[in-house]
Image: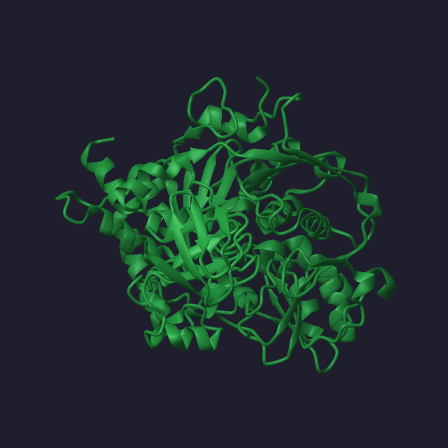
Length: 165
Length: 429
């Protein structure tokens, strides 16, 4: 069983202005956005850039993660480090863009975890090995499953175009 | 089965007799809007076609609008390059609803779309901007999407796998008191619902206060509906909608309107007595941290901003000009004013509002998003406090995480510019 470590814990209503501050919005390409992830959290941003946050690490969030602006940089910046977002719930536009770009997201309404905790993710549950508690997860919207299965919206749309749909 | 306004709209958009909440549909898009982030949409759009051997051609250039507003004129060479890339794409694809950096037809996307008649009742509008909810004021189902979602719309002309949202019915009755506006009403609603209270739902506005409210106020209501987490804010169209489209937006072709069924089922009903409202202030650092002005008046201010897609319209400038005329913005506080479009700017000049505002000491800047999201002009210094008619006060929003932003109506902003502290305009007259 693969375990992942919580490297950042944030509260409710974390906006895309926090994840990717507006002043970096002229940078748009997914290959270039990761450098500005959580730019106003200087320590976390430095650790990301220094490679101190292993690929696949968890970011644990409260409710309404990714609220506010529709800027997709807020998704591509986290995807660039292959972070897994485990949130109590996720704002609509962020969730849609996360699925479109293939960011690993887990909706876990009761999640309790602190930075440094080790999590095990199995079908339908997040097990916090540090606290010993387990939490149910909610499935991602069924309507978007075909996009998830295709590996994101770009390959999904490409497939539709090629099949003339 | 009785349908809410959004249910009925999506039924018509997909040629169905009815739709149920949660049903998955793929409606055609009537208008797809982007601004400077069109640069990212273009690269995602081209990525879709990579390796297909097909030409990357948008489904219908007449249904696409691109408006430069976030950084006009360009603040950096990077932005200038992005804007240049978009100009090339617009020319190649034959997109005509393109508003470049111009002093005649330019402005903020959420003002340009309504005032040019690009939005119609019953239409489906998506934009790569969360405040696309604004256009629900004209009876459209309008919402923000990410750049990749937009790239897919450019290719296919339809949205993929959208769930029919539930609706919250917001019923507002009573006359708004003097110096209390649509902005105070929507701040009050966001405070009551919370920043998550309408997540994945639509706010559908009803009641006498809404029916007598001009479109400018309805645009403010729908604009900020997203701050309660709503997918969209919607005002079912009425005579005022038609008046606006005919008289202000110059629409001459046929306009079809419909309303929700009287016995439609809503997830929640929120009733508000507008006559009891006082000016409302959203305090740092969340939009739902809303307090009546009495609780925060006297807060010292370094910068005051009037403008944005929320409150940069002619009646907003009028409210400010009436308070500022013949007076002086107090020393130690700077005031910036950003009309929402050049059309508004010119009307405000004709009516003398720009002169009154400028002679009072405010800096009237060119239409655009300005300091609202901290990327162009009017950034804040460390420990500074701003009072703004914009729509978000998140930490760092105005370019500095060590600053604070309060949100209010244009009248509160103007009254506070004279004193340098948060001031109730009902007491300042």
